[in-house]
Length: 111
Image (cartoon, rainbow, N blue to C red; front, top):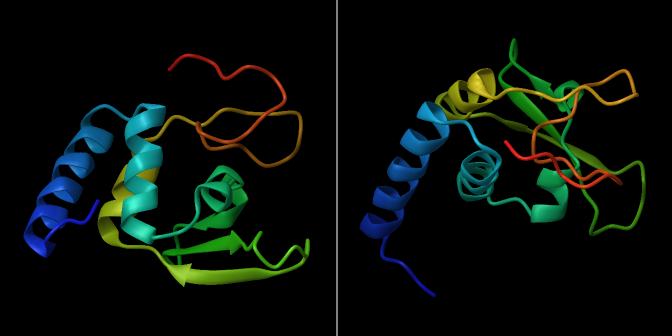
C-alpha cells in the first residue's frame, strides 16, 4: 500500500495524537515505526537505556547485520520524545526498563 505524502502526514499526526493521549502498546509501537522507519524487530529490542532524553537520541541495535555489537545512534524528533515521556514502562529483571512493546518470553500484558 502506498500513501501520498499528505496522507502519510495526516496518518502520522493521527497516530501521534493517539499515542500521546492514550499511550497504549499498539499506538506507541505503530508511531515509533512510522516516525523512525526502523524495523519492527529493532523497535521491539528498545529499552530505556537506548533512549537518551538529554541528547534527544535513540541507540538502535541493528539486527539485519546478525552481529550482537552493531548499533546506530539517531536523533529523536520532539514528537517522538513526547510520546516516549508519556509511555508507561515495564520493569524486567534486568537493570534497564523495557518499553511497553518489548519482546518478552512471557505473554504480553494487556495495556
